Amino acid sequence: HKKLKLKMEAPVYRQSGWESPGNSWLLLSIGFGLLVHLWETYLDYRQHIRLKVSGAEVPVELKKLVERMDSDEEKLLEKLTEKGPKAQAYALAKSRFKFVNSSFQLILSIATTILGLSPYAWDLASGYGAKWFGGSPESREIKDSLLFMGVITVFETITTLPFDYYSTFVIEQKHGFNKSTVRLFITDKIKSLLLTALIGGPIVAALLSIVRAVGAQNLALYVGVFVFCISLLLLTIFPVVIQPLFNKYEPLEAGELKSAIEALAESVKYPLYKLFTVDGSKRSNHSNAYMYGFFKAKRIVLFDTLLKQASSEEIVAILAHELGHWSHGHTLLAFAVTQTYFFASFYFFSRAMAAVDMYRSFGFRAIRGTKSPTAGAPIIVGLMLFFSTLWTPVDHTLNFLLTLNSRRMEYQADQYAVALNKADALARGLVKITFENLGILDPDPWYSTYHHSHPPLVHRLRAISIAQESTSNKKLD
Image (cartoon, rainbow, N blue to C red; front, side):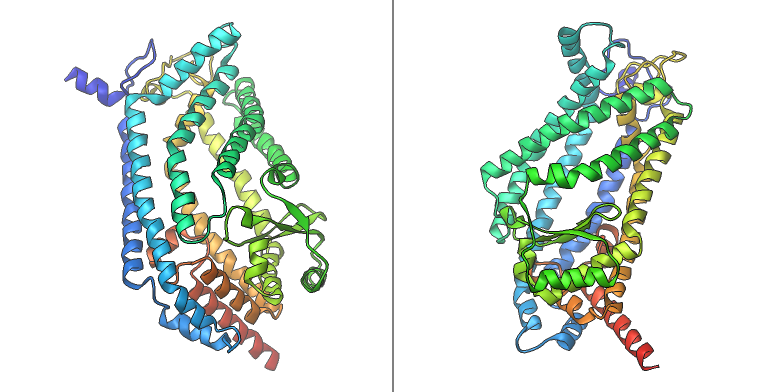
C-alpha cells in the first residue's frame, strides 16, 4: 500500500532529497488533461460525423446566398459545388490525422509525467552545467535553466517532427497545397530552433533574473513592464528581421491594385507606410493577407497566392475588412488583453511559486522555509509547473472566451467593409477563398464555436447580406 501511495504521489523518477507531498497534484493534473482530451475528442467526433454525412454538400442557405451574387462569368456556385467533395476529403484527412496526433500527444504527456521526464531533464541539464560552468547550483541556475529548456525543446521537436512531416508531405501534398521541399522543411526547423535559442534564451534569462531579484512581492508589476517592453521589441523586429529569414517580401508592383489599396487607405485615414507581397506559394497554396505596424508606419502584406485567387476588387474588399479591425481597435485590444493576461498570470504565480507540494508532486526537491522564492526548486520549473497545472483551467477558459470575442470582431470587420460599399466584393472574395482553400462548408456548430476564430462562411454571408440591406434602407430613408 505504501508503494502504491508513493507512486500516486509523484512520478517514478524523483530528485535526490525528494520528500512526499502533503497533497499531491499529480493525479489532478493528469485527470484534467484527460477531461479536456475527452471533451475535445467528442467535439472532433461530432465534426467528423458531420463531414462524412454532409461535408461534400453546399448547405441550402449558402446556395441561396451565393446565387444572389453569382454571375455567368464567375460561376461561384458551380465552383463551390465542384469543390465540395474535395473539401470533404481534405477535411476528413485532417480529422483522422488529428485523432491520431492528439491521442499520441496525450499518451506521451501522461507517460512523461508519470515517468518523471521533467525532474530527469533538470538533473541531466544540471549535471552538464556543473561540468561546463562549475560553481554552486544556485550560482549557475540560469545557465542550467537554459540547458533544461534546450533538452525539453529538443525532445518536443523530435516527438512532433514525424507528425509535422506527415501533415506537410502527405496530407497537404495529396490535396494540392504543399509546395515545400524536404530541404526547406528541415531548414525551417533549424532556423526556428536557432531563433528560439538566440531570442528566447536571453528573454528567459532576463525573466528568471527578475524573479530572483524581486521575489513574490510586486512580481506581477515588474514582469508586466518587462513583457510590455519585450512585446514592443518583438513586434518591431519580427516583420523586418525574423520574417525575411523565411520568406521574400517585395513591394507591390504599381498598377490598378496598388492604386485601389492606397485610395482605400486614404479614404479612411489609414497611415499606410508600405505595401508588400510575400512568396507564400514557396511553401503552400493557401492564401492570406494581413496588416502590421505601429502608429504611422503601418504595412499591408498580400500573399502571392491571394493575388491569383481573387480579383483586385475582391482583394480591396478583403483589405477593407482588415481595416475594420484597425478602425475598431481590435489589434490594440488584443495587445491589451495579452498584457493583462501576463500580469494576471504572474500575479497568481507569485502567490503559488513557494508551494512545496507543487514541486514534490512532480518529483522535484523542495524545502519549506527557505529564502528561495520557489522553495529551493528552480524558478524555471516553478513557471513550467504553474502554467501546466494550476493555470491550465484558466487558460482553457480564456481561450474559449477569446475565440468567441474573435468571432464577434470578425462580424464587426465585415460590417465595416459593408459600410465602405464593399459588401458584394467581400462576399465574392470570401466564397473564392473558401473553395480555393477547400474550406469546410458546413461545420458542426459546437465544434466551430469552440475551435474556430472565424464564423462559418454561411453565417458571415448572412450577416453581410443583412448589413447591406440595412445600409440600403438607411440610404433610402
